[in-house]
Length: 205
Image (cartoon, rainbow, N blue to C red; front, side):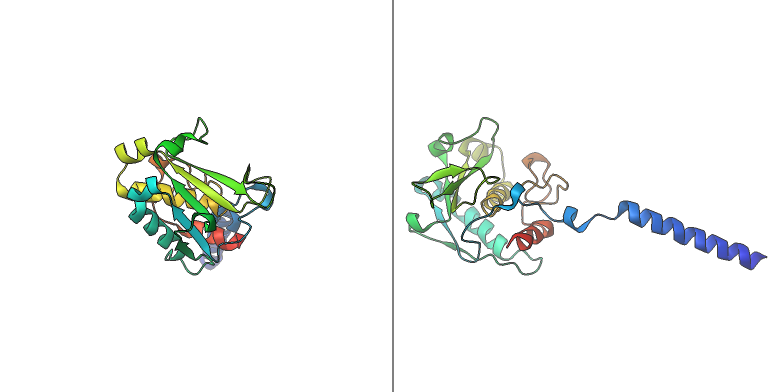
């Protein structure tokens, strides 16, 4: 009789564990930083991604270089990203601005930084929404006032990495603060590329 009761208890525990695992298991898609809606991405891919530091953004050179290097070597396995600093403005896939340029194309809600996606396959350099079109390069605008007054270098690098992610077609990851693509700087617990971000890039390219 005791043996039967023990077996019932064991089966009951196993059943409860199975139910909990089904309820609380996070789907694979939820564990990956998402891409922009409708599946558009950087037209030339990320296999050779050149970034250009505009003269006014030169004070951030080390942070920009570190952010680029972190996207290439995330520490979470391979991805197809290779970034190179270019001194040829016309060859860039990612232009990084600071100072007065920040005001040129900023949305009112943007505080720390903003990425603009640009398509050059049509006539001229046309600003596009990443949810409606492919793009050929991105312009990253940094808010000098907030960057220099409020944040440490570690957080600044995280902001730059976040915007680079947008150029490479990653959207905001609102499900985890342990993602460099989490939208709120003050609540973001990671200032370097996370596994979910690396997996997001691999899912796109």
